[in-house]
Length: 371
Length: 258
Ligand SMILES: Cc1ncc(C[n+]2csc(CCOP(=O)(O)OP(=O)(O)O)c2C)c(N)n1
Ligand code: SF4
Ligand SMILES: [Mg+2]
Image 1 (spheres, each protein chain N blue to C red):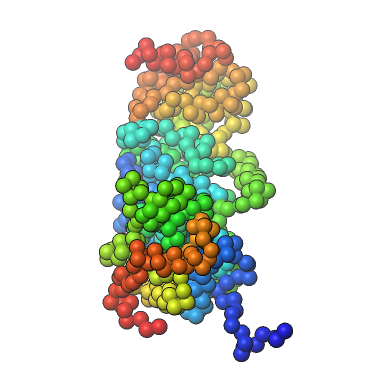
Image 2 (cartoon, rainbow over the protein chains, first blue to last red; image 1 turned 60 degrees about the vertical axis):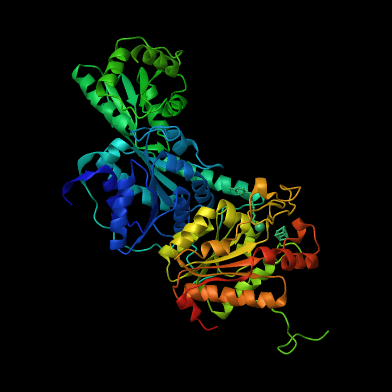
């Protein structure tokens, strides 16, 4: 396939179709509505299921039903809509069925705005719905990566019978970039040995439910989910490294914040500053080990996010206070400029950092002077 | 003891049932509704290609009793789950089984829109005028003046609103092929209920749109009545408030001969 110009949201939609998306259920919300609109034409044209649901509650439960039937299914939404889906996500995880959910995040809390944001990191990575479960969460930083990770999300969801989320922000969703689409995967339904797709004269009945009335049985489910999660943590961590070989300190940033950080790192390198970038692709499972490897040889970290420091907590957990961790964030739908991050890099390169400084407090003080 | 044979057998477990004893309280008509569904699925030879969707409510374990595939939905979301299943498996028979709290309160959005889209599903709706499972709180179908654990002085319509008549409400939607109300309070009505359930599944099997049978049902435990008094309560108080009848029978459905 040649490279073509694709808009992020439409690229995700087409990539899901190429990956064998069998059913899509969604509800309009900016800045992801193009995905729904694109699929409203594309899916019926291929004889596949498309329903514009009555709400995100309806959409996620349609996803749940189709997932139980054993087909490749996806919904897409943006922050307020994803909040409404939390009940369904918890049930899907409790039932151990695969599903893909894309969240094109926007500024919040509440109705917030429609500007690019990473404020739903905690919701996606550390919880959201009730009960003990983990989602796999992928964070693309370009249109090509959005395509590749969308395709991968279906494989991961099915491999582990889990929810795989793709989180991005409206800037990736709306940007046009040259990208390569995968070939169309031939439409062939998997014949899962757990799907409730009707006995059809072949087998005894099957039940899919998230109920375990006996606490011992529920605990067994919790343990099963946990041991699966441990496998995922061992086998599925993905990240990208830039200029790490001789880096004296390292930026950690995902998605758009990571992309902006990369431009800043390149400019800093041109000025002779030995800084590198670690960009998590799987924000969940988080690349703890990659950070562990860096702790021994770098003098500190700078975490950049479009939120108040949500991934920062995971980086601190990995670093365990052994070297200083600094933070720079923008919130509310504000995307940091390259110069802002470059400024931070220059500040760090020319000052002595301390492990005793609270990175969020220090950042807020610098913000107070700047804003 | 006389051995059971074809001549003296009066009761037999329908093929559509598993041999799991139900957990329902004595005298509860949930069990009657289950049996009618199982009989209809057996008569129509649909057991093998049916997928049921259980609700949250006393019938949460409905999946244990039918010999069909089953999923268990979040509270009120059964019609959405059923939509997801039916859209990807249009040649299967998909039905939801829902209580009045499930369908007419928390799941009002899902049921109305499944009906409006004309989803080719069958809904068996158990109206027992209260939230049975959680101990008898007021439901959207609780009668005016009726005492429940959350309307201890009787439902006061001034502050707690009026009962919702779902069969009437859904019948206004063009996507609906068949929408009726029946009652389970005596043998004659049970026979009529079974015929309606049959018609509802026939509606789906022929692709004639959304079908729902609302069944007036008892909850002796939370009503604080004997099973017999509960049946009388249905006849004397519920039937007048929720009139039995055919609220929508689309032209194609009217031609179905059973
Ligand atoms: C989201 C959510 N809210 C509340 C509950 C608690 N709950 C369980 S069953 C039920 C009411 C069920 O009543 P109904 O649907 O009338 O069924 P019945 O038990 O009367 O057959 C409620 C409120 C729940 N399980 N989930
Ligand atoms: S609580 Fe009421 S509805 Fe539930 S099983 Fe008992 S009698 Fe039936
Ligand atoms: Mg009830």
